[in-house]
Structure formats: C-alpha cells, structure tokens
Image 1 (cartoon, rainbow, N blue to C red):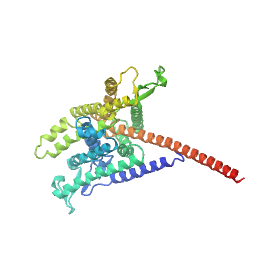
Image 2 (spheres, rainbow, N blue to C red; image 1 turned 90 degrees about the vertical axis):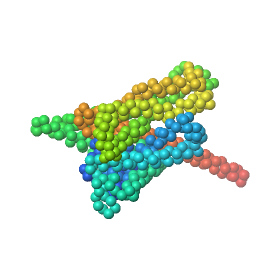
Image 3 (spheres, rainbow, N blue to C red; image 1 turned 30 degrees about the vertical axis):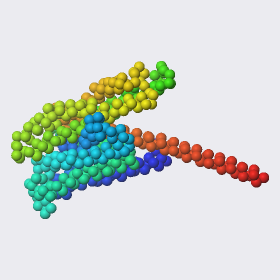
Length: 459
C-alpha cells in the first residue's frame, strides 16, 4: 500500500526513530535511585506506568510522562468554554489564539508536573521498593532524607522528562504518524505486552491443586482461553471505537433529498471524548495515595484510610474512579466537539439538519444526540478501564496482566491513528503524483506546441 510513497516512509521511520529514543530513555533509571525489588503491579503504579508510556518500570526520566500536560489541557479547555473571557476569545482567535492557548497549557503543566513528580517518587519509595543515594554515594533512608538541593534536582529531572516527552510527541504529531501523545503511551504498552503474556502464563500455571502430569496441558489450555478473551475484548473495543452515529446534513438551496443514501452526514463517535477522561481521572486518583504516603509519618492514620477507601484496590476508590470517567466523558465530549461553534458554522455555510430549525434548535439537537451517545459510550469506557481491578478483586489475578484496562484502550486508539495516518498520507501522495504526471504532460504538450509554432514561423 505504501510502496513508492516517500512521504509515508519518512513518517514511518521518523515515528520509529522517536519511539526508539523514548524507549531508550524509559529503560534508564534516574541517577540517585536504585531499584530494590520494585514491582509495577499495584493499581496506581500500574496506571502511572501507562500514563508515563512505560517509564515507571525502571523509574526513569520519563516516569511522570505527559499526564500533567493532559490535565492542564483539559483545565484550559474547560476554562475557555465561556468561563474565562480571555481564554474564550483566544479559542475563537484562529491560529494565533490556539498558539497562545497551547503556551498557557504548557505553563500550567509545570505545577502539575512538580506535584505528579513528588507523588510518583512518594509512591515508588513506599515499602522500600527503591533505594536513594546522595551525591556522595551513601545510601539514605528515603527521598525526604536527601538534602534539599538533591531532592529539588530529582524533581527537576522528572519534570524535564515531561517536557522532553512533549517535545518528542510534537515531532511525531508534525512529522510522524498519528497523535504524538497517544503514540508515546501506546509504545510503552506495546513494549510490555510480551512480558504481560509471560507473567500471565506463569500465573495460570502456578495452580498446585492440579495433577502434576496434567499441569502443563491445563496451563496451556487456560492460557489459550486467556488469549481468546483478551483478543475478544480487543476486537470489541476496536468495534466500539470505530462506531459512529451519523447525523444527516443538507445544503440550503439544494432542494430536499429524500434518499438518505445521497445525504451528507456528520459522524459522531460512540466515545467522542476518546481516552482523555481515563487519563484525567487516573491523574486525579494518584493524588490521594501520594498525599497519604507523604503524610504517613506525621499522620499515621491518613495512609491506611486512603488505602482502604480512596485507592483503586478498594471498592469505594474504584467506584469513584468509575464515575469520574463517566463525568469527564460527558464534560470533555462537549468541549472536544465544540457544539456551539459547530452550530455557528452550520449557519454560516448554509447547512442544516433535515427537520431541525437552525440556531438554538440545532444546538439542542446536537447536544441531545451527544448525551445519548455518552449514555452508552461513557459507561463502556469506564467499565473497560476498571475491569483489571475488578478481576483482581474477585479472582486475585494481578492487575498488570488482567483483561481490559486503560492500556488496551490506548493501544487500540493509537493503532487506529497510525493506520489512518498511513492511509491519508498514501491518498495525498497519490494525488500529488497524479498532479505531477498531469503537470509533466501539460508541459510536454506546451513544449510540443511551441516547437510546432517555431517550425511554422521558420518556414
């Protein structure tokens, strides 16, 4: 499909090169930290690892990832929805306004990156999972036992990792395939799949109640069933992610079209907000646990309370996470689609929805359609996100190898973006090559005509 398509090959190799750099940085542990039987099996550490593109496995420079930027982006978008007048004007200000909003988003991402860095360090240092060393090489009791300057430097390293990740994501978005942020997160998930399947097989083969002679056969049988349901959920997410609600549209002066096959459509996805609600809800769920770990020395009762009621391992914490995803799905889908702007564009271009009056009636109709779509899409997204934690509660299977979850949603979304980018680049290249061929033919015809005229005048 992409043979002879130079632009597509450049985009593919640019993306692969950036992902190689990102994965290389994700496997190098930050100086001053030594891993001490650190496992990424907990609900929050697993979620942080996903949002960081797999950087938390080695407590690397990219451990925090781009989740602070996503949090800041959602807040800026919400504030620009006629809440802050200046941001609302920038949102309508074309390319220059979008540039300033992006600048504000990156500035706002800084305090979130600092808080997330402190939360990440606090979470990974719980239970002596990692060891800290000062500049002299001496081991200290924990992060807060380091000198203030060294603690600041460690936080700066994690924060700089966020902005380096954003820089790499920008390169992918401009020169590579798909949305850079999604592709970076997808790369970390894809790179951990072999290890996930290996751990799943070991877990399924660890049943000591089975007769030893049949143990290997039963383990393989269980693993095949596991893979079957894994790919079944994968296909279900692909189907839901690609499903759309088509709203018919007509042009003023075109005359009524009664054949629906000839109508133009406005497609709205069943999950219009994408994976953003999961990322934002996950970022918010990190802070209570990080705060509990931070205050456990001064207030010993805080950490057990957070673990019992606000962590993803508790029923209440999981319920809060579930409803946060649903809430942000409803909120962010309206921000993402910008229905007011869409309604104004309908009026300017002379388009309308058959049977619906222009203006406020069109806006109310679109809002009603999006809300009805979210009544199915938002709970589905939330259920898939909490499925690993539910399996961990009821079956004891570790969350990092359970079915479903945020990772599989990001994996599907990123894969579809890559395929769509390849298709669009290929189509654009075909048109470009046709135009080049047509231009060459026109030039040849003009040269031939000019030669004939010169010959005529010569005679």
